[in-house]
Length: 97
Image 1: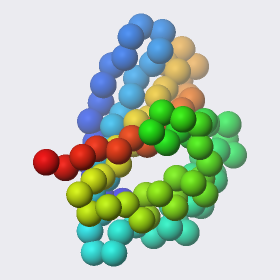
Image 2: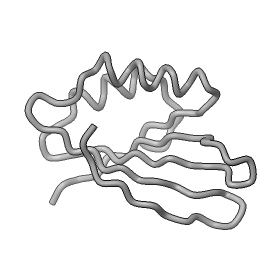
Image 3: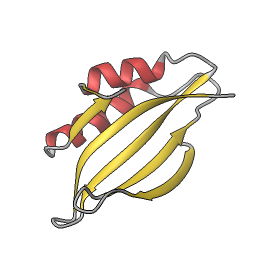
Image 4: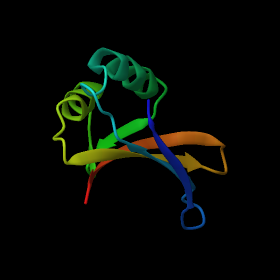
């Protein structure tokens, strides 16, 4: 996966987010590889969101692998700092300017 990783501290008690801006070129992402990754994440009890709504590995991998050239998706990893675990994974569309 190619991208830039940034960290962002959220409000106290919510946790910390790590953002990865995905900007794939040359044919896009490998749908099967992404699906397997997300299926594993979901299997660990982590909730997956696509553009603000709960989603599935199938839906996210389909959407990200057929994205338009002028847009990218950002991964937002949301952690529960008290428990030290990843609780949510968000994918949000980012328009390239």
